[in-house]
Amino acid sequence: MIEAGRSHLPLSDLALVQNPGLGAFALWQFGQGFQAEDERPAPFALAFLVLPIVLHRATLEIVTSTNRPSGLALFAAKLGKEREQLLAVHERALLLRTLTLQSAAVGVSGRLLSVDYKDATLRANVPEPKPRRLVLPERVKHLGPASEKLGFWFSNLGTAQVANLLRVEF
Image (tube, rainbow, N blue to C red; front, side):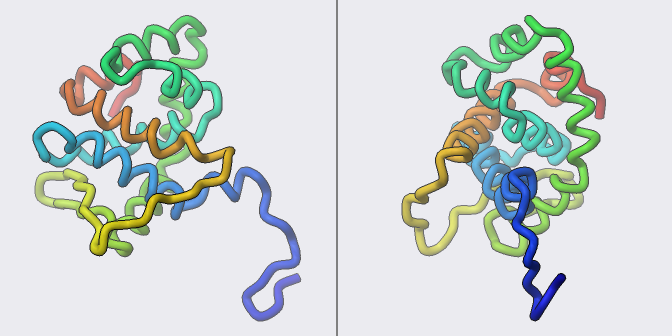
């Protein structure tokens, strides 16, 4: 039953984590990592890989446990130890397309992100005024750093190399 825009049903754990606001935060952190060295924006296609990786507990743990300098190749090798997990990234990317697009839209409307439609790129903006340090719940506290790490890893490779390492197709 819904009264005055409020539901009496509690949100599921899935709805709490897989929402466009949290997704926008993850994409913004991804963009920050991608732009860390040379400030070039990320190819928009790569954004479709962020949420399938960081919103899945097992892959998030592998990202978190892989050192930043180790790179995407080591992450993919760890993920590939259980081949099903590596192949599942593509399936999750397909399933989370709508959430990724909604998250990008929330990020753009909140001025965290900019999309260059002509070049198909995504840029993480510097918010004004500078944001305070966020205090995130325990179950999502690794999401931002993991997204930023993915951005850094992806920035060192071409889109085709990322797709090949993660066994995905665009």
